[in-house]
Image (cartoon, rainbow, N blue to C red):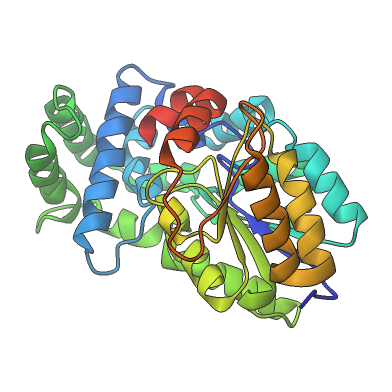
Length: 329
């Protein structure tokens, strides 16, 4: 059934911007790009292990000691938000949605100052952004010279390690650094709460309730491991969970997928959803799936019901659109 208040909540990095703010912040100092890849892999390992109280997207907390050590500041975060690219079609899609009465929200793991500044550029009310709060300039006061030396030491120790090849050593060293009995970084991890995993799902439900809607009346868009629970919850409720240029973590949990160089391709599906709910959206997606994509555009697949996952086309176009960020999976 169509809803009187069409609501969409989208991830930011991937669906609306090809940039990865955390990765770019780490690139501001020598060796930071490789260190980020190691920490990102550690985040995956903790997630797959199912560590209690740990959520996907924890990389945003894991990188803080190193950002502080190298003097990265709030001004750097805001500067990158001003220069970040926008996913082709994102501004046009948001403009159409809002012109047709849609409520548009962002639920993202990235840092709040970055997300709010980028939302403004996209034409979305910054108050409609749920993101990770990180008072990075305040954290600098928590980092004594002794603590900074420990961060420097672990940075050196993992500089030669390779994700996947050295997973066991990565996990052993970083477990001790972040969670060991003498770790000064546990408090920092506890105070930084990345919006990923269950927190994204809770945020989607909270936003829906603010409009007196349920998840069955909600559209969400995601692309990665931090979006899995949100996509799964909305799909199971009967809402519309869209995987856009997604990876192997996100695709199995979505209602439908779109692989395209332009997110504006999603508009006919959303228009059908607003007019006739899931049934109408299903018809549009299946018709476009049958017609086949147009090269790098309009590659739709209806996934609900156990259809084969179109991973290769998503992998190819995700890499095409996200460039370096796609290398992190």
